[in-house]
Structures are given as C-alpha cells and as structure tokens.
Image (cartoon, rainbow, N blue to C red; front, side):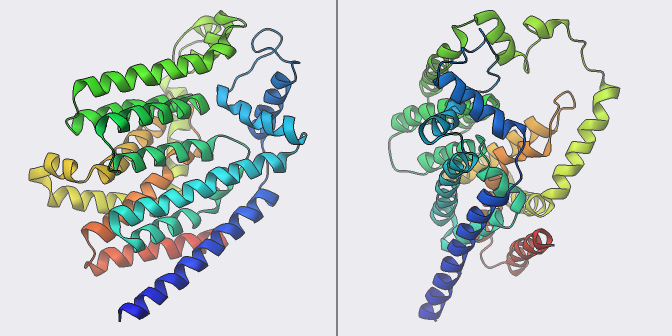
Length: 363
C-alpha cells in the first residue's frame, strides 16, 4: 500500500542519512593522510601570513582556490581536522545534490539508491573528506547539473554555470576538461552559439582573474608550472617526450586498478546507458533534448573518464576517479529508475551493485 511504501522509504532515508553521517565522522578522524593534504594547506597558510610569495621565494604548485585550506589554518591554527571538516561540509552538500538530482530525474528511490552507491565505496568517501579539492570539484559539477534541470532561463543557466565552472577550474585545473564537455553539451542541445561564446568568455575571464595573484609574482615560472602538465613549456621543454613503451604499462596498471575498484559502478553505468542507447537509437538527439539532466551526467561521466584514463601519456592514478565517479553512479541509478522502472533485472542489478560494494568495503 502507499502508506507502507512511504514508511519503508522514510526508514531507508533515515538509515542512509545516519550512515552518511557515521562514514563522514569516522573518516574525518581516521582516514590516513598524504602529502598533498598537508602541503596544499600549509603553503596556503604561508601565503596568507606573508611568508611565501608564489614563485618568488617558493613554489605554489596548486590551483588558487586551494588557499581556502590555508585560510582554515590561518583562522583556526594549523589543524588537519579543521581542514577536513571543511571538506566534509562540501561532501555533505554534494551528497544532498546527489539525492536531489536523483529525485528530480528518476524519483525518490533513484535519489536514495544513487546516494547509497556513493556511500558504498569507502575509498571514494574517504578521499572526499580529506583536506583536498576533491569534494569541492564534484560539488561544482553536481551544481551544474542542478542548474540544467532547473526552470531558469537559458541565459541565466549559462552565466551561473560559467561562474561555477570557473570556480571548479580555480580549484583543480583538470576541470578545464569539464568546461569543454559543457561546451559540447550546449552544442548537442542546440543552444544558440552566443551562449557558447558567453560561457567561454565569462569562464575564461574569471579563471584569469583568479590566477592573477598567483602569476604576477613571477609570470614565466608560474606559467611553466600551471601549463607544464599540458604543454611543453618553460623548464618542461627540456624534458624528453614520454615513450609509449615506458608509459603504456603504467597506463594499463592504473586503468585496471580503476576498473577493479569501481567495477560495479561501471557495469551498472554501461548496462543502463547501453540499453537506453539501443532503445533510443533512431531518436538520440530527440532523447537528449528531452532528457538534458541525464544527457549531461552521461557526457560528463564518459568524457572525464576518457580524459583521465584513456590516454597513455597522462600519468594518471586511482584518485582521479574522485572527480566524476559519483556522476557515473548517479546516472546508473537514475537510468534504472527512470527508464526501466518495471524491469526486474535492472532493479536487481542496481541493488546487487550496492550490496556487493558494501560487502567488499566492509571486508
């Protein structure tokens, strides 16, 4: 009956909220640390106290918004846990958006199962509570999806997305790829070219302004470090080009590691997206226009996965999945509950992935 179903949902929702709170609190306290978590905040703290001038008396090899962790140390004293609490706030907001997007696009069970999928991987949640920009960047991408499924005008969506995407890039430079994917999304959705131009111009202007304080101290060296991972520039010009034979084994190793860690997420995503594509094969463009939120989730998921793990010259690692894996999980949950709600096999796959993930992480 409807009353029993509502009661059951409320029970699962409360249990999921308590689980999320427990995971966040435990991992903030006990998740092991690593070098970037310490150095980024410490260097930001030194900049705010005036002891470090970027690229004059020291190197600041992080994106500008990493300074927010330095600000935490500056306000509350050097304290790793205080910085992790900031990340935990970002994560809590991101989890709320995961549920909200699922609710809007696939119903309440899509929101809840999408949330459970994210929580079922402790490595993912643990990375998000660390004092790094991982939680902030996924929060930005989820916010972009929220804007696209909102009822505001196209122009307002473009302007607000430009701001959010610029903040994401100022948090992690690899979000330039996400900005490019959003530009492709605008073209797929048939948005006027002027919207693409506005998006590129506003995003670029904000990013440039955000980087100016970092660059002005010593522009040549600063640009070398900022563009070095992408271009042969400055000191990086003297480095030998990586040989395929040297890099390919690492590329395969990282790819296998990612597939092994997120196997359930990937199987669910590929099964759902593949089934939707087969069903809508002759009307994909019409489908995309009718399902903008799902289309953007899939585009972000596929594009960012390919950019980070399907090019052997990129020295990737497992942590790069933090930038988009919740989008893959959410797309899978929404796909099952929105497009195959009466398909028992699809629902069994979704529930099985959640349970097996929890079991594997508990072990």
